[in-house]
Image (cartoon, rainbow, N blue to C red):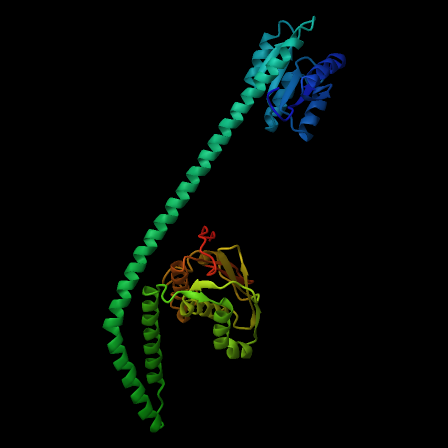
Amino acid sequence: MAAETPSHILIIDDDVAQARLVQRMLTRAGYVVDLAHDGDAGLARCATESYDVLLVDHQMPGKGGLEVLRTLVAQGTYPPTVMLTGHGDEDVAVEAMKLGAGDYIVKDVEGRYLALLPAVLERVLQQQRLIDAKQRAEDALHETLETLERRVQERTAELQRADRLALVGQLASGLAHEIGTPLNIIGGNAELLRMQLQAQQVPTTELDAIIEHVDRITGLVEQLLTFARARPQGMVSLSLYDCTTNVLRLLEARWQREGITVVLALPPALPPVWGAPEQIEQVLLNVLVNAWHAMPQGGSMTITATPMDDTWVRLTCCDSGSGIAPEDLGRIFEPFYSTKGERGTGLGLAICRQIIDNHKGTIRVDSTLGEGTTVTIDLRRADTLKRGPVPQR
């Protein structure tokens, strides 16, 4: 036999002596052979074992060979099959071939068919090998086409996003020029008027609202500029522990008052990463502020970091907040898309993605509504020049 692994054969034949003779002959030829002495027993074996070839006798009490084939076809568990027939059973052989049998052989009284059987079996096995190889090739082609289609879609989305970012940059520059100065004048005059009215003990509700909205617009313009200018500058070897603790110090007092506990699990020997410290801290601040807003009744924040290999360090921020709805999760990195209503500008995570992309890293958000959100950030290690594949988002 050409195959390195012995082929597994099942003989379904009610002639016990003849079946055992065939079993011995095929075993000597290198096959692994099982016996079943009626159709039901053969079907039972097929239900529990995997066979490379079936040898099925046509004439058997109970279920005959054709009925066995029909049952296997109905079950969808049809291995390559050789039908054993007697003289004058050509019609049976044709019917068996229509049902999918790979070949047939006529059992003559003298037993000459035994000499032909190994060649017939090998031919059927070879046919099946060709079918399997064709299927593998088709599956590989299908997988390749799916991969190419996915990459085209991803690249198209990246180009569309790049176009949107360019428009945002132009919009930000225009807003900063056209709105910045009038806003400063409005805000300054409103502040002055409020001070005068407060000195006269006159209510300043309307002025408070004006100043609040001026501050909000100013903050939005500043975020737009940050988003448009988010380029890696001053790249150095930096400590994620230092960046994280710097940001946590800004939130520590407020979080303590609001019942938010922090678990910081960054190993002492964590490798440094390559990046701009201010921008990495800005990413962490946006992530932690989002977590804070998702835990209005208090909760927990767990921050961990670990080396992935000699190229990447992974930082994970996991909160116990309200989570993000599935229909929102796919859009959270889009500029101006916010799940916070009036509180959000929709630029926080967009800025995070922009910064991490410029650092040649990745950022991913996983969330379960009502259970919490996990933000995973992969950054390149600073202590190696090896270029590795970007982790999958």
